[in-house]
Amino acid sequence: MKNYARAFAPATVANVSCGFDVFGFALEHPGDEVELWLNDSGEVNIRAITGDGGLLPRDAGANTCSVAVQHLLHSLNIKTGVDIVLHKKLPLGSGMGSSAASAAAALVAVNHALGEPLKRNELLPFAMEAERIACGSAHADNAAPAIMGGFVLIRNKDTLDIIDIPVPEELHAVVIHPHIEIKTSDARQAMKKTLSLTDAVKQWGNTAALVAALMKSDYDLIGRSMEDVVAEPVRSLFIPGFAVIKQAALDAGALGCGISGSGPSMFAFCRGNSIAQQVSDKMLEGFASVKLQADSYVSPVNKEGARIMPS
Amino acid sequence: MKNYARAFAPATVANVSCGFDVFGFALEHPGDEVELWLNDSGEVNIRAITGDGGLLPRDAGANTCSVAVQHLLHSLNIKTGVDIVLHKKLPLGSGMGSSAASAAAALVAVNHALGEPLKRNELLPFAMEAERIACGSAHADNAAPAIMGGFVLIRNKDTLDIIDIPVPEELHAVVIHPHIEIKTSDARQAMKKTLSLTDAVKQWGNTAALVAALMKSDYDLIGRSMEDVVAEPVRSLFIPGFAVIKQAALDAGALGCGISGSGPSMFAFCRGNSIAQQVSDKMLEGFASVKLQADSYVSPVNKEGARIMPS
Image 1 (cartoon, chains in turn green, yellow):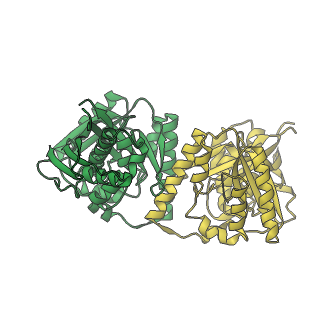
Image 2 (cartoon, one colour; image 1 turned 180 degrees about the vertical axis):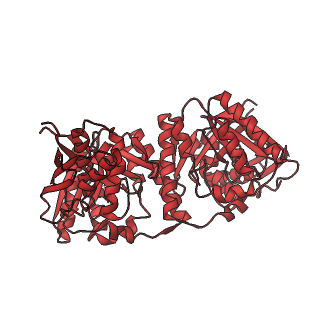
Image 3 (tube, chains in turn purple, cyan; image 1 turned 90 degrees about the vertical axis):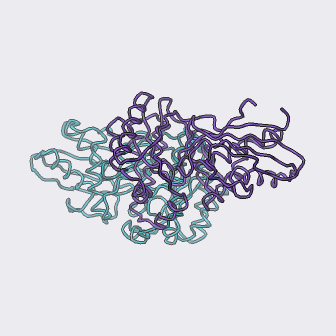
């Protein structure tokens, strides 16, 4: 159908233990979907949202998917109207890049409906503007992998110097979402604004090592590098049972385990799907032991990112 | 000759702009040489030092080459005596890993004379003990590349988790040593003990990116990643003309330019030998313009590290 598009954008894991604000990767599933129609109204409107339990704003100026579209249209000086339907499939406030996925799906859809005026990486600034209204900070560590896929390094978020880091074929991620909510803005607030040089050196030793480990397919080194002395010590306090569940993941064979984004979801990297399934089981048991329901997702790293769906 | 060995160990560039305390690489030349003879005295002695202008301690407990040997013998519980002659070819206090090169050459020589009881990477802890007496800190970012060669990442200096980072074939380093001395201990003292989270994020974005750039042979990204917001702003104040000389290097085609170790030497990465020679010329001119004599070294990254020499 002309002037119509439907797109999917995946859940993403930001920070990835040692890489606060610089690393993120995309999952194959789950993800949000956006349908949209161009029209002559000159206005961007949200016509419906499914799957959010009525929690997300319907005001086009307050929802990440519509804000992203508004910024794109403004930047290209296109006066079209857009009607948006958001199929929200990611849990809200989960640390799985929910706000970025909605924005990414909307941007890929509207770019397609407009005849692809922009390249994929050119969509990123609009998704970051949407992130700003979601959490007060225009960060790229969810938005970049949601749009472009893969494991990405944000070398510089001002110049948007984004580097794709190849990952080993057998690498699988487990993401466990416990049914509690942490607002990204609160989780950012809890972070200390300064750190010791000693801790900083450890952290950049690990960020550098994780890149080397992924590019060398050195699974042991992936695990050793997944050490976070900056965000995890503070943010793990928001997650009941964190230490026990992390240990259970490692005992079950995970290479490493940490917080997905700002939490409360936790993630683990594993070598191969079968170990990942075992790790998932043990992490779910861990959350059950602290009386928390949780959902589990097991996926390789998604190399493609957001994609157009058949209408 | 039995129970005799002579070894060479190269100059090294530590920190490498963004990688304070975690990156280091070795040059092909220049380097220190150590000759040594085993004997029955049960004592480690320095018999002679050439090339140091009489400045280095002759006391075996105070010179890095003999201290390293003492630690190795103690660790292996070997009661042999060792007579050492150090041929000092690296400038002292230059930021080119002079103390580490002496220790590395001595360790490779004594290990050879003893029949190679230790593997190459097992020599590192003894070189680090020698570094402790030279500058008060048992750092590995000169010692590791001096012994093992290559471009190395010290992920963790306590567990000695050292990772070899492959570098592109055309990568050449220029190191310029101006004739002023900065003590490593003073240069470390000048560093701030804390940093802002914002600066820390920039730094680990760059360390991660430099690893990716080297492994991808992405020369442009090598240059963009060579940004240091932690050490260079402080330490460059000790180097007359730093900003002008750095700009001259970049204008002459260097990928990036920074301080070698704690200075006063500066280094630049270049693509290919011919650009490196031009960069060297311009940096020498820069030091001349601030009335400083300087020596220049141009070299690819040394993949081999310290080596036994024909006797």
